[in-house]
Image (tube, rainbow over all chains, first blue to last red; front, top):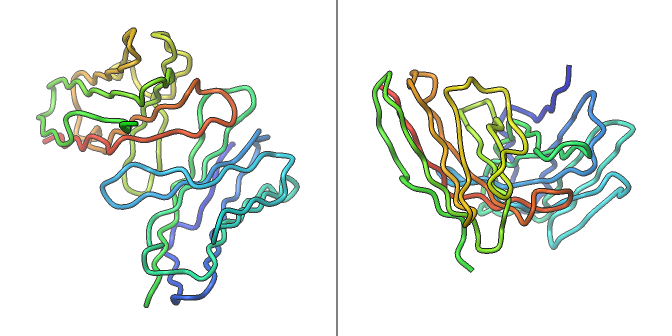
Length: 112
Length: 114
């Protein structure tokens, strides 16, 4: 069966360290993968998109990698800050479909 | 540019009632998608509309329906509400819903069914 997995347990990271979140998928061949941030009571906010032929994408303190052989994407936040605390969602876009397929999200807690 | 707006923000209904939620996309965006979000389940895709046509539909019962108007505003309707329909309903707009377009989400409508 097709599924997307993100770590369901909250990730606790010390301020200033690098936080790494994982998104694994099975039985999909995504055209691209997106990462979103969601704060409590609000809708998700787009952060980064990485295409199937890209290995890595960066934006300020954020970095995303995409390994289509391992069927995995890693999302890194360097020099983490308490304001980075939120739930992070990954979503796949299949080439033949208009919809995004979402993971359940990982809650990230940055401790001062 | 104004963001995606959703009304109402909060709604309390009882079982068996019906409800209509509204979404106004970002100006110029023609694709509107609807999602249901419950704790631990992630976002479950309901349907996507483009130019007043439903292009894609998720695995939800027929009690869930929607429509899009010529100005791209969209509504979703849930009939015969069940307790399990309690959730955050999110709508998202994008330029045209094709590859590489990011989605912009509204704040959601929190529906509670008693």
